[in-house]
Length: 273
Image 1 (tube, rainbow, N blue to C red):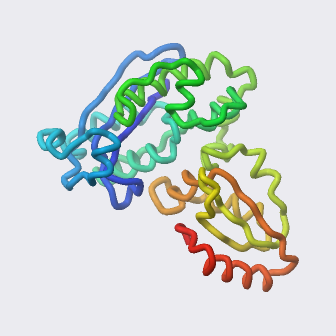
Image 2: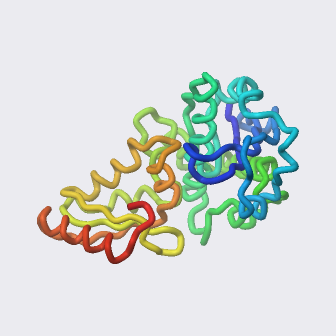
């Protein structure tokens, strides 16, 4: 059984922000068989830019339950199912963190519909939920609201299951698979092509802007390390979800890499350094 999840929040970092809405659709591998939805009172002001994006106002959540009041229900819906979301690291990170604060330890296998879509439906210009829905002919109502986004994700998930001729689901769910840890907006093949050599590497966002600069004796190993051991609710998770491409410059030795890294950080001011 799968639990297809979408949340709305007061910001992007689970350690500093709160959930304002949760929607869960339970999927049996063929169709949706159960659902749960609620606005959540975050006990803080919702930033205006979040209000503008989601339409969720402070007035809408004032009488909604706090997360602690629905934590048991949410855990019961999720704990024995595979956690599915569009950019699963983000939603899982918030849910896991909030459940942990209320005494529930979530240890679910995860599937990301961004990564699966890139493999099963290759070649689209964008795999954002809105663009992917449009490409697949899926109706997406109430964009940036948990219920609308989760329902669209559930429809896409059904299509992914039916079209998985390459056995990508089973590969992603294997215990030793690193798929769930990798940036959802990058193909694994691009990471595999990174050199096992000394140099400086650059993480780029969707617009191509450099958001992180690092150095390594072994670039490939170090890049994998960023994501394999990242928490699902910390800065490394925010970085993982923001990476769309990686470039690098080989330096030949560690000293030159150190000097180049320092100079590049001073010149480019990457947001995650």
